[in-house]
Image 1 (spheres, one colour):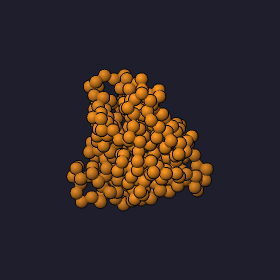
Image 2: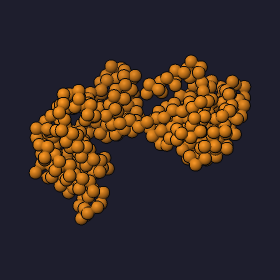
Image 3: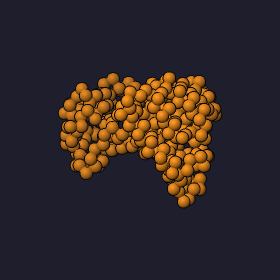
Image 4: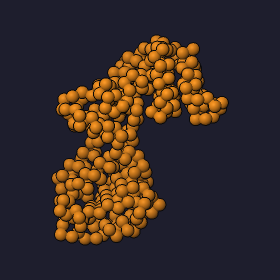
Length: 334
């Protein structure tokens, strides 16, 4: 995020590069930078003749270069944005010749999602020398909460730790989806408000009582009644609660618990760092640590691997999702 802000500040200061090559696994920042350039480099009256948006599936790299070499009409610059440029991956090296001598009156933006250029290649080095290469890396799950808090702070909103966990549990590391949900909430909330699980349930549809976070918590507490109630809800709503994701989340919980058992330094700061969790949730791990000895945790991890395989259709003997979820809980609680 800091690198993105620096790029925007440089543009605002008039330090505009002739080429912006935006690449990487996380499309959110690629889209945001492209949108910013699209909305801010040219004046509104200049855009009709001097702003071109191309799509990688519809053009060749030669056509991209041809558009970039044109001169602006009644403006100091033209902007050429190539979206979905990963579709040009087989010929992207041909951009090297243009990058060696880019048109100074053109701002060429290449949105190269889900892929990266080989940094050892000459084309990458030339782009870095004469333009800007930005890599948008996928956030690790334990960093999404921090990112979410910063984005909300920019909107003058707060969020409870459990509400943060709900976002991550349901949307994972998909920043675009999370940002869309934040935008929905920002419309109905006022500055200074705090996002709670109840607000999320009411306005987005994630259940504050029947979600993977609450399932893990019930399992950690050995609250069998609640765990089976949540599993039954999941079985009745499989589209909202895919079994593969549910098993994966529970597997991750016990894998972390195994790590926790093995830690010599169980101080909150070190444990949160090693387990990659918000310190707020360590109390749940402390409870589970007492309820599940290390030997039992090892056995559960092994059993969850088997159930994961079955959930993907291997050796399941036609077991439905409800039966697999029950089998998972039986293995855990027995």
